[in-house]
Image (cartoon, rainbow, N blue to C red; front, side):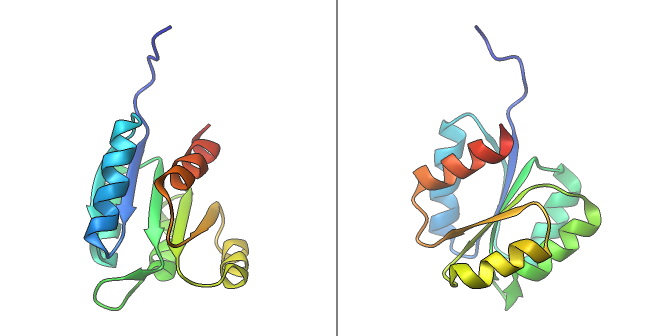
Length: 125
């Protein structure tokens, strides 16, 4: 039976280009639309407001001393799109953050693409 729903749009905000490229290629192969792969806070906010993705994959540490946590707080002013944080920080710190910023989850780096896909499927079901 064909799926007539439009592919879910995902914005990837990751300062390591190789990681964002791997995520992007894998997610496209799985049927998602990657609206953009950006490396800094300014571009993240710009592409979010222009494309209104269904989900944001957001690294906590970004280029130019960017801070994914601050980006998430700015995104919350624009909407309640689900955010998946990726970070090398401890899970305990991120659990507190997930309580502070609504509709978020966290994956600890390195994040296997299978784990990312599983989390995305859980959120976008």
